[in-house]
Image 1: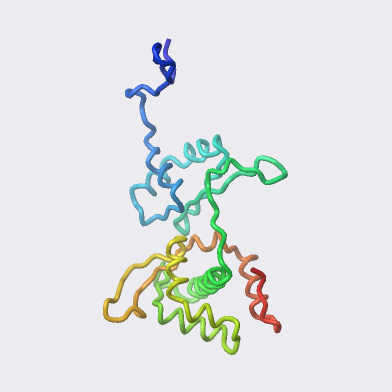
Image 2 (image 1 turned 90 degrees about the vertical axis):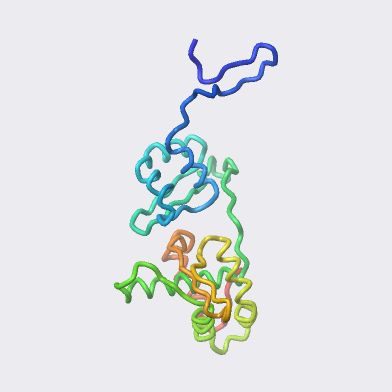
Length: 212
């Protein structure tokens, strides 16, 4: 009898036979489970494009939705809610963002929008620590409760890099302020247009308050 699993008669342990064929998209699936995938990871991205139907179907079977934006070149996983209580399989962890990191991401998303509207010569937005600091100081001018974000900007930049919303592309050993980062378009998925406008309206309101 040909079955997917074989059983060891002595121990009762089931195992997958070594000769069982591994799916050609297996490495791509494993990569997606680690976080968002971008098209600059060419090998995994090419597998995603070729086997997207198989990957979508497989992830759906384990309670996870695979979302792909081929135009902007990113893909990520989102858990499917199994009931009206929001229960999920718990496979994909969503990290809560601190207040300061949220503000930084909102400003980066705003900069990305402005770049896409005004710059047609380059596909990607690149910024330095210095440029980001100037942008923040300009946006939060005379808003004292934003001082912490600007004062500890380098720490928050590193957190955003860990989240995958910034990618460090060049380090300047003589002047860290000139370190260069790519603003990743995956920001659009976490901060869509409605979310962006909500935060910007709060930031620009007279009471200068933003809900954490």
